[in-house]
Length: 84
Length: 198
Image 1 (cartoon, each protein chain N blue to C red):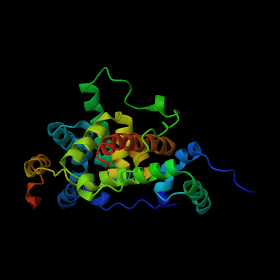
Image 2 (cartoon, helix red, strand yellow; image 1 turned 90 degrees about the vertical axis):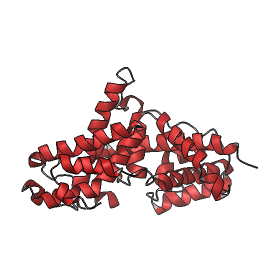
Image 3 (tube, rainbow over the protein chains, first blue to last red; image 1 turned 120 degrees about the vertical axis):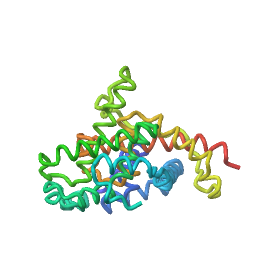
Image 4 (cartoon, rainbow over the protein chains, first blue to last red; image 1 turned 60 degrees about the vertical axis):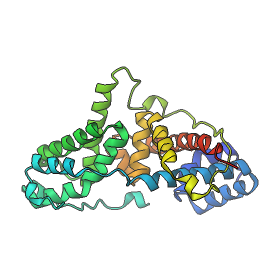
């Protein structure tokens, strides 16, 4: 059975799983065939990947203040284990 | 597939139940940072994030004997933290539309509007203080239902199943919300970066 040509709306529904690498080989190949022909979808895939990547870059920037950590250890009665 | 991996607790539940303080300290050491960051990103306030952190571990300690270990300890802690976060959101914005997001799960994802490939911008344009501010504002604009899924899945690296368990929603709802959150953030960043294109 041949798959029907994927349209942009169908791609949109599988987009997250596609960028996460969670789709079957067949579906991936089908999407990639569509991407070769559809510039707009290519841009959406690229910028979606980059968006996720940028958020992952900043995820560790908010540090837990030492004073907050100390209060937590005292409240839980484990201050003897404070290592920093 | 990977979602079905056996649950592996990094901290010994048995030791925690026996009142082992060193094990409790190990649990706190492992999970306090991600839980604090989750609170901060969900609530946008350091004080609220601190309160969520404290309450999460206090409640975990109080209910450890009832925890049967059906999920991993991290998922259990995230679930307690998310409950605290939603309680705080309800207190702060009692008039806000439903926080659970079920009403919009059946909606189709919005079609992308901004079609500009900004990936080729130089690194210093793609990440700087102004970009960080834009990213924070974009995440704040997401509804709590979408924001929580995005943070747990894409920033805290929970699997679809763990995210579903932490939020008490189905895996299908996690997937739908994640796609909508990602598309919305992509749209906002595309608007911002379109002004930076040569």
